[in-house]
Image (tube, rainbow, N blue to C red; front, side):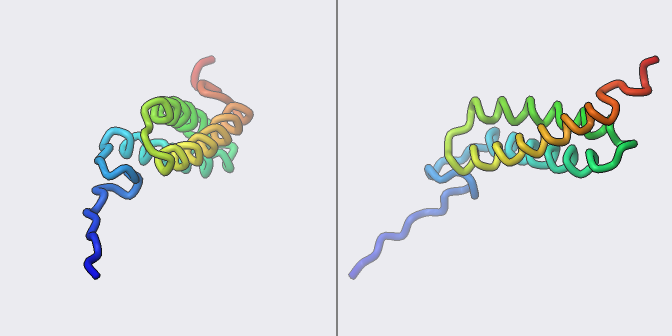
Length: 103
């Protein structure tokens, strides 16, 4: 029997078969910033990095959710948003966005 060969989707997260470069970029940025915010939030003296990375990660993840087209993109964005939010909140608890910089 002849089998149909499906073409490659062009992206790991584009399950609809169309490329989504902007959405994939926002997903990658959100995941990287979320991971950075989460890891640096574990250290009290790195609160500036964790709070700012978390805030920017929340904003990019929110915009990515707004324009995402596939479930796989949304799943990655939710993971990145969660990491960003935890990093942001712990960074705020340790000193905030401007803690020690503005007197």
